[in-house]
Image 1 (cartoon, helix red, strand yellow):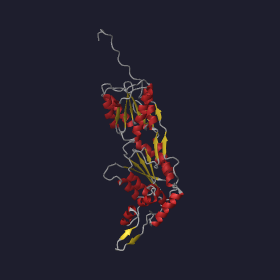
Image 2 (cartoon, helix red, strand yellow):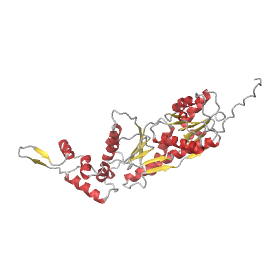
Image 3 (tube, helix red, strand yellow):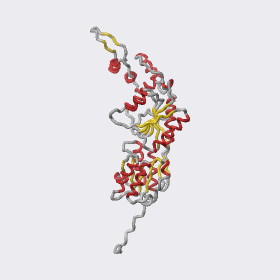
Length: 373
């Protein structure tokens, strides 16, 4: 049965809405909701948002059905966003206390300069109390679109942005992104594979790894690559050699210390970020171990400082600035109403060999029995 927005008076003088519960709920509030229209049309809320905001990537029959319901329900539409552009996009991070973030910013800023678009940079700390608070702030000011970096996006937050007609692109999403949501990342699995294969090729067999937070997709992909390299080489996987840090110096220092304190410590450590690798450098120094003579270390990111530390860090280059530019380019196309050519873009990683890796040290020779020490 099709919902109708009008009401009728019964014989007893009661006013009732004709239609289902979604229409009745909207009527009680005195305002039609997009969710109610989506339910009546039999489509998703994002599809209705696309129609409201004049996006081209909707099937003609679906568009006609939604437009008819919008008219019947007298939905009040604001002016299309493309008619009131601010020339500003938002770049939102989970945290800004990292040179990794600076590289992403650099790529987005380069795109913004070339396209006469300002970039507003902010950081959010996620909590459970107000899950959509930062999206409310974005929806309240004139932004043409949002790039969200290494952050978790809840369904409520996504729907709030979509209902406001705000285009969104995510970079290295923490959780599995909505299949319709454009995202940009790097070949994390291939990077973890290359880093571990490099250490294996040097002769290492006991290789530790320090990933980022266990629930980060990029962290899990890098550790999966590490494990695949071990399997390929016929080396038994030892879960005791896997630790999860925070992608910061502290994570590498603390988790690296745990690995080096093992009765049979690893001869090499693949750290899931350059900053964690620098933390491993420090804990190795405190244990009296020389890098790479007694401990090989590989990072991930290839931050500019990686070539200047001592010894220069072997690492997996992640094209951070290029990832920022790619995300901004996709966002710019969405703002123009151009559907993305691909919903998921992955840029290639590359192993950069420097001086922090070497063959494992030869164990001290055991003197023959009966030989005086």
